[in-house]
Image 1: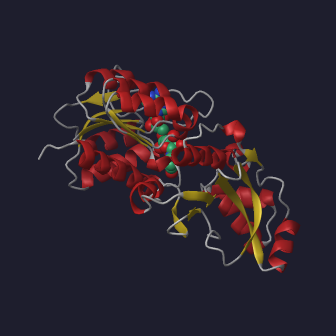
Image 2 (image 1 turned 90 degrees about the vertical axis):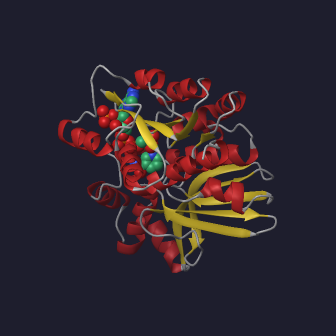
Length: 328
Ligand SMILES: NC(=O)c1ccc[n+]([C@@H]2O[C@H](COP(=O)([O-])OP(=O)(O)OC[C@H]3O[C@@H](n4cnc5c(N)ncnc54)[C@H](OP(=O)(O)O)[C@@H]3O)[C@@H](O)[C@H]2O)c1
């Protein structure tokens, strides 16, 4: 199976490293970052490209761009791992549409296009007889989509509750454990590399809400948008609120929840019993699915990181290979 990778940051690098390291039958024929690209239809020397990127900041020839790779490389699957834009979805949205229109499968970790244009993209993939998979967009390494498709096949999903933002979870964990203020915990999260310089998307609950939209649309095909989510972040939480929860044997977590029968789509700080499976520490993510047959299932794992996110992408690639690529 031949793949091209658009984006060679944390996730793109993790995917390239794992493909190079493991004998998966996957050949990388094109790679691009924001300023350059490289194409070799016989297979790129990944170690060399990663070293070039590390030492020079670019991965290849400055005359080759991401759109060139989509047009000129030979590939079966586009791995789209460029930055998220939740307002326009670009440049990822255009890249994904181009690949699907050329009957190429797409695997992405990019929330923007999936949250903004889920129905349009799935229809385009179906029309062209290819797959669009996006396991890495929600819950990092946690195999949520695979669990829904396979392990829980035939179950009705009645509701879901999740801790979907590692930055918020880290801040809340540290506020509760050390009695830190929100500002102190945020500063610590920044120092640890868990929070962006501008943490607005995380702490206001927007990142979790985008992931909730993706989950709700995947599960119930209800064409939800970010604006449909009832949203409260953690930025106004006080140490007193956490202390009061602690006094009752509880704690506070930013919970994303959805239930179609209750018309519920909400992200907000919730008081939750300390022994509840969703009370995970640090940057972990967790998702509880309430189903008719299996009842409650909780998945816990790493919600971000180069190699954990690569795990979700590789899982999607191998799923495409097994379903579509019938060659020996
Ligand atoms: N990091 C995680 O743990 C994680 C987890 C789940 C999902 N995600 C999502 O995965 C995606 C990638 O995340 P990341 O952490 O790898 O981001 P990142 O480190 O910022 O890397 C983004 C890469 O995309 C490249 N790029 C920017 N604009 C481009 C363009 N127009 N055309 C082609 N390439 C372009 C950048 O090029 P330069 O190198 O030249 O700047 C960089 O190589 C994002 O959508 C993110 O939300 C990330």
